[in-house]
Length: 136
Image (tube, rainbow, N blue to C red; front, side, top):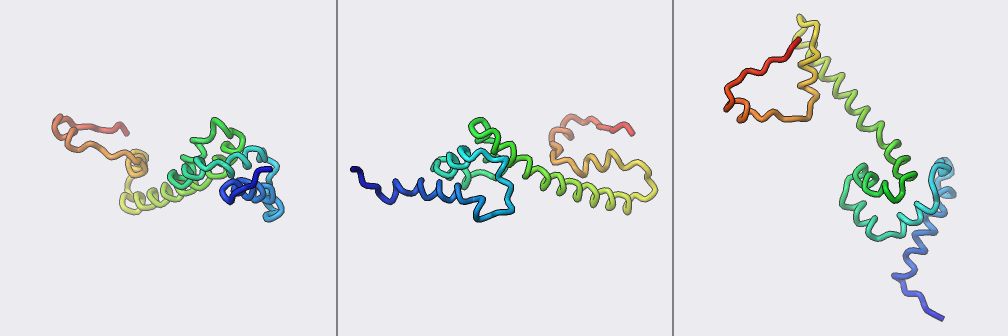
């Protein structure tokens, strides 16, 4: 008979934690989760390391090919947070533009620039000596 070391018994503890998820959190809907995927993720050391190194959405995107059902559900649950943030930022930017430019009816192009995460390459634009106009 083979004896178990502490390192070998660690995956079984993690599996027990995954199996008791519904008991510890009765309000949590676990019907969408494949229990096999949860057990695989909890017991895989490389996925734990990846989880510590990456952001939460990047982690789920990376493991999506192997655990698609669980990753899709996680990404759907995470999606409202950045979209709500973007709505709040957009509304605040619109209010700021309307206060400063109360005589302009159409602030669409200014709002697009304000909400863009792209930084213009000023040096390149200046070296070309061209004016760039937007069509209103």
